[in-house]
Length: 417
View (cartoon, helix red, strand yellow):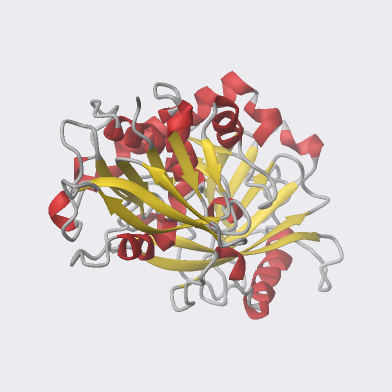
């Protein structure tokens, strides 16, 4: 009888891992656990959906390429353009020159540890009287502004990330295969057998308080920004500290008459720029007439108990609306755009700027052991920062291989602290 595998966290990383596990393991032995009252209520539901193949540091490069290829393959296999808005995209750095107090480049954030440092390749610089301006029609720009291409053709793409009431193709497929979803449920403790080896995990339904025990020998913690709390709850005597913190980020989804179905055949665009308020807006046009605006982040906002407890700050929303007004060319009262959704999510980040994908050794579990010979273990997959959607499928595939004791599709040794 196959031993159950419990995945704590049903965001894009957890669901992707369950998807790949269910291809070779009995689906009924795979359990997804999500405590939040709504699915995809944080980073997985409020992200921009931007995909990149090669915007990563060396330790993440192979994983990024694998994940990008998997996104493309699944989109071709399941009709991704129609079902989740998969489309080619072009990455652009936009710098407003004339009358602007903005001094830094729009792609400065790409030069951090988690991104490649040589992304910008100058394609065109606007000049007075220039016609046929580079870039999307929905972007407001003036003579003297500058746009640099920062993506090679075929290396970036875009998907929808819908509201929290929508599910993903991977989750639907998992459930159809027989993967068991426990929602809303929270893992509160683990139990061990007479050999002090992990034998089961206890869940509490967060609505009814009903308790259930799932016999299991393998656990994956993929709870995003909540992964540290999950680990300390299950292994209270461990001295190990999971090095993951949270970074809050506000976002808006808007509609503009400048971005409609007639423009979609030209492809989506990802715009990286800077704002007078001192942050770097990111704008992503998506199929279906939506434009996503984000880039306003705050590490000081406390992580809520549940993702649905997040409190949107209207001051942040106002700043994003101001950016929309400038970049989308709207009127002062934003009459030309419709705000479809306001969002606040908490991204899991690490000091290195790279995710953690690893088996947590028994000596770090506070006196608990796991079964040997590949029959047990505790794993961690979190800390993807703003790259959770982009790296999701590669992460799910590699974590499923780790959990099943197989050779991994790409080398992620440098992502094991």
